[in-house]
Length: 299
Length: 274
Image (tube, rainbow over all chains, first blue to last red; front, side, top):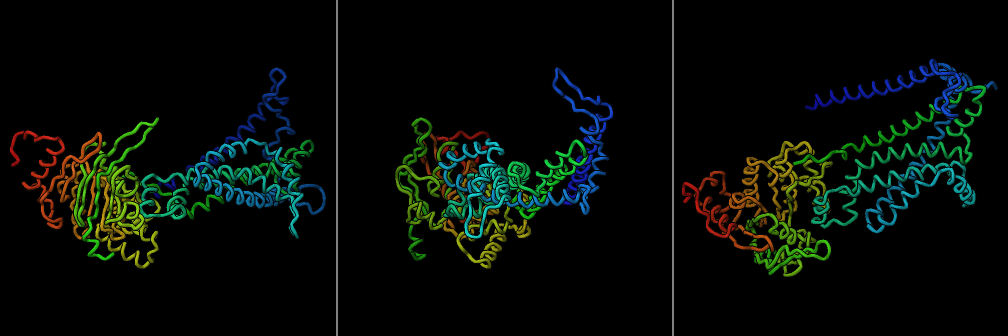
């Protein structure tokens, strides 16, 4: 039984990879296909452009994007290849996003804990959490930068990357708070009553029952939080004017779009890969908690 | 309190207990009324009756999972609440309620772990219990790898972990098939007489109640009350085997409980069962 299950898993993993590759191929074919057959001026309907132009400036060839990625960033001497610069910027953003994710996850989890402990808190706080996610990031960024600039405690002074991390954590905490709350509330009544017959208090019940039971809910929430932290970082880099990250690089390269259109696509691809990498890192963390993902078989 | 003093006290003493549930819009449901019941140490007592007769509610009152609206419930001379705080009873529910991320052994150790028993002692006790319920080959398995009957055995082992003098069981075999059920009944009756624990056992099944019990408490709904208490004289639990199920005394017990449930003698169909 274990053997067939193992074989099934290998098979399903192989087919997952196959479908993933197929998806990329389909995208590439669509891009090049439309570029080949579409009108150069694009398609307009009643003055509104509904399909893009197909000239090399608007839609560079995939080959051009790839070759541009291995050429130097600019003509100055010692300029690194584009892909190296992209990886550097991506790692920079990853570091900032990781701080934001960690802070956001801890805050989100603490909020969930509070809401689980006090029903009043759940009713009072939950609407605010939802409301918090409707505030546009662009509006938030200048406020956080301005407040941060006023913080100066001894040798510590607020740095611009911290503003970016705060904004990333602002996006990351929400899925973690909601997921953790569902997880902490997931134990069956029978389990809660069992803990009561053992005279286990709130903290013991949390440690032995609610925390382990929350893992299957917490892991996807943390993964979602990681993706949100990346998005938050990329957007916040632009709106706070933080230099060195991938978000800033996307803007900078896009500004040279008229003369060097293929260059802008490398950091965009980098940002996509960054999101995938961050989700994968969280998935690796999840592997160590695998045994908590077991479900009770119906008796 | 010494053991002799403990033995002198009834395991459970319920005096004119009642329970009223308030439901939506101030309406009230009388779940139990005028319950009087005494369970002696080491005695096996079943609660039987149709759905809604309050047998599970009575068990929950004894376990202090709900509190009585009126009357008095004493467990080994203490209030139900104090008895729960002092871990005077072990409990098993209809669903096994095992923690899915814990192995069989770790599930059985849970109550010991919560009460600060050392690791070596926990393992030794778990080993004993695993042997008692016949799961020696499954010590490191997880609940999702066990059949329903095996899960219920683990739950019973867990309820026995702290050597309680009282076991509370709420239809623990209700979800099992008939064959597994009969085997589990025989094992339970053996385990209980070996450990000398008093048992309150909630069930729907007349043969189950008769096979297991010293006394069967027959209850009736609206409002939940005790209509009769049938003494079953089938000898000590250690001597109860499958052969008993075809014994005349067993049939007599079944008939007595059935008549108590229906409130009048039931005309025998066909052959006279004596």
